[in-house]
Image: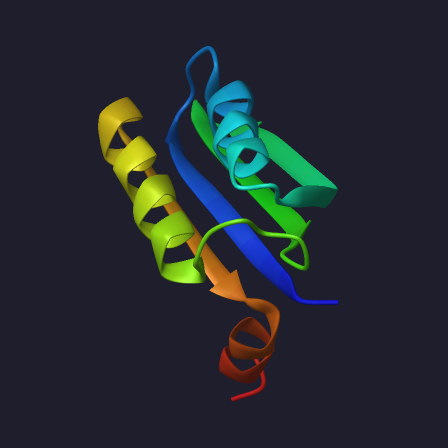
Length: 90
């Protein structure tokens, strides 16, 4: 199973989860787990996703999510699980 972590940070507004979920669904990426919170009007979300049946390249998904982030005024990043784990081991 190929996995990744999606992070979303920015000012809270309506439709954030919908927009990110729609983008992932269009790329046939399954959301396995999701946590989100709002702290001092900042929306913070982390998604654990399965890339196994993705119908596009990882780079295209990353660009699409970053573009969505720019459009809605959020920072949206996706990292492959192995890269995420390596970064947090240091």
